[in-house]
Length: 113
Image (cartoon, rainbow, N blue to C red; front, side):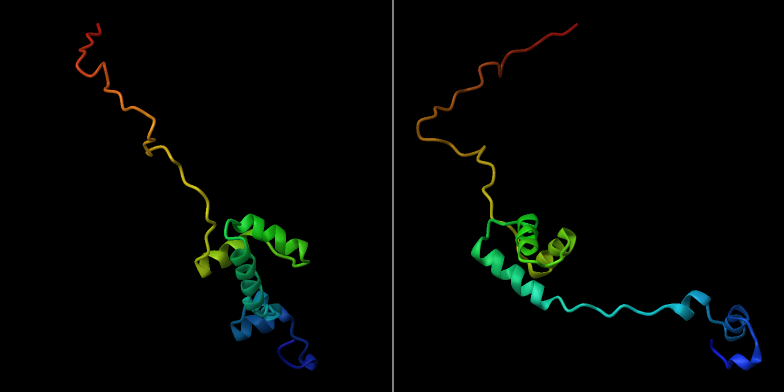
C-alpha cells in the first residue's frame, strides 16, 4: 500500500493518483553480481591451457562446482580479450618437395553452343 489502509483506496486507484505503474510498485531490483572471482578463475584456467575456448572453460568451471552459463563465460572472455589458440588452415604453404605445375588449360578457348 502506498497510503494508509484506513482510507480504503484500492492499489490500482492509488497508483493512478500517484502516476505510478502497478508493476513498478511491486518491482524489487536484483543486485548486480560481482564477476571478478569468476573472471580470475577463467583467466587461471585459460592461462594454464590457452587452447581452451569458452566451451571447455565452462566445462571446467562446472566440474569445480560453479553454476555458470556458457554465454556468460563467452561474454567475460570477450571482455578480457581471451581467445583460444588453435592452428589455422595451412592451404597456402608451399612444401619443399611439391612441384608447382603450370595450368595446362590456360590458353584453351572453349566454344559452348
